[in-house]
Length: 94
Image (cartoon, rainbow, N blue to C red):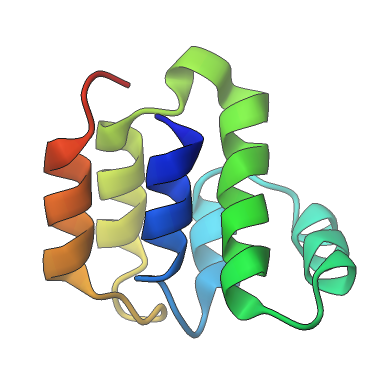
């Protein structure tokens, strides 16, 4: 996934985003560090969380993995699901 897409996705994910990070396999301490590093902007926190996921998972950081994680956390994370699906459909390759 491209960083440009991750940036756009970050504006469509809201409260409870930490649960998404955990579902994606990130350590809670790492998520807290990202939050502390970017205290002034929740969108930046989410972007850097997704970026770290991409860096760690490399080729395994795919649209399908992200879709599944979003589905698994839909009760505890606020999402703009239509916008996210549109962005993921528009992403060429993973």
